[in-house]
Amino acid sequence: SNAFHMTGLRPDGLEMAEAIKIALDEARLGPEAVDYVNAHGSGTKQNDRHETAAFKRTLGEHAYGVPVSSIKSMVGHSLGAIGSIEIAASA
Image (cartoon, rainbow, N blue to C red):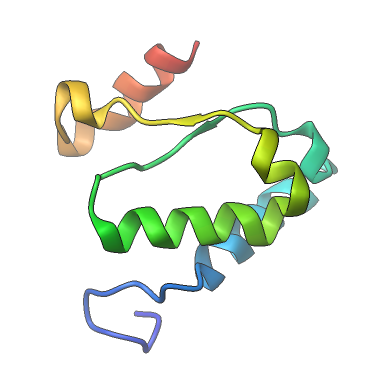
């Protein structure tokens, strides 16, 4: 839990931004190395706002030039299988 809400996400995207920052740091990459984002993209106002805020917070101005998409609008959210489907779609 993020101590914000039992199931809700903070609209500022802080937790997701921190996860992105840690991943970039561990990979020794800067925000400019990101050239595409396959978003979780569940299509809810809450999630879309959270993800957008996290991308902007982590990538800064670079975020405005990075393409973002999600295939859930086309295939639905297949729960445990969605990770594999999204990897295939992003390849």
